[in-house]
Picture 1 (cartoon, rainbow, N blue to C red):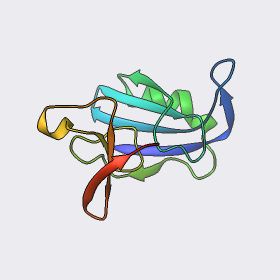
Picture 2 (picture 1 turned 45 degrees about the horizontal axis):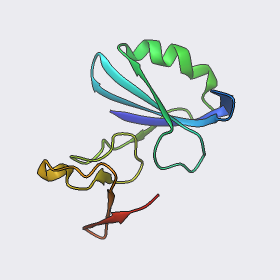
Picture 3 (picture 1 turned 90 degrees about the vertical axis):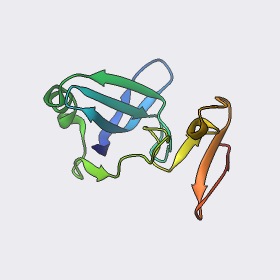
Length: 116
């Protein structure tokens, strides 16, 4: 399950960065990631947090979520980045030979190079 939400107001997370939106990704009942995005139009996260209880995540974040609430989003495609809003993957990951410094995006049914 994946859901994202925009914050009511930006949340300062360090000396330079503010969080504008978040995405939760529940892989198992006790394995949940919260991805934090430092731009309203960011495609990939800047930071992430780990939770073992979904209710704890909601307790911590629900008061900061704007009136749109949590918005459902499809789970990532196989081998794709869990935090990405678009189908993005590490090149070669699907073949077991990842090139960690190269990304691909699915566009018109084909995987092409992606440079954010």
